[in-house]
Amino acid sequence: MEYDFITFHTVLILILAYFIGSIPTAVCVGKWFYGIDVRDYGSKNAGATNTIRVLGPRAGVPVFIIDVMKGFLAVNLAYYFCKDDFGTHNEFFAFYEVILAFIAILGHVLPIFARFKGGKGIATSLGVTLAMLPDAALVIFVIFTIILFVSHFVSLSSMISAFIFPFISYFVFGHDEYAYILFSIIVTIFIFFTHRKNIRRLRNGEESKFFFKKKEPLITKS
Image 1: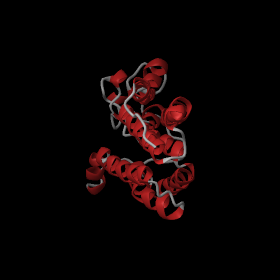
Image 2 (image 1 turned 90 degrees about the vertical axis):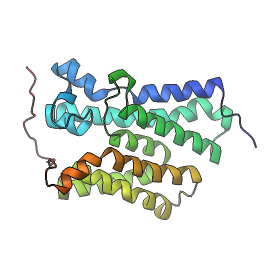
Image 3 (image 1 turned 180 degrees about the vertical axis):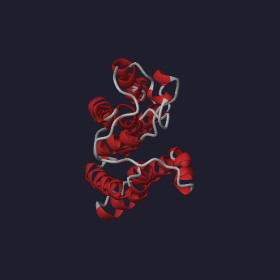
């Protein structure tokens, strides 16, 4: 069965996925509720981890949840708006999901609404994976949490979890669709790429640790 991929309708959905990914949650929370740009403090990253470090869990946890939801919603655009174009549960639909996933992650890392200075894409990557491969996503999240609890390094936990992800997806849960295999490999490479500065800091013993216990944020609400 042949599909017409390049249609006005599908292009609009791809653009919408980028806009959803581009919502700068950390920047909005920092500016709207605390009067600061989190990209000026800490690791200067517009993500949940830096938001927690700079403003505390009350600000950072909602940022994490919304960033996950961004990815989840972007991928589900395929189901809600394109199932009549492609059908579902087929290889072509899976590829379209993957394209939406990458566009949403790209939007988070290079957000048009925040001068293309975003986060590293971890929470949004979790969201898109939850939408496509929920079983693998939940296992990887548990692995991430365990590694974080032991090491206290978010970056190390993210990279190890990303490295394990393709093996969990393919060998444990049997997701052998070409689109999902490609997604798991590329997203792993992408996460390592966005963490290249963290790799240098880890190697030099300069990476900041993350602790679960409550800690005073760098910036307090005035």
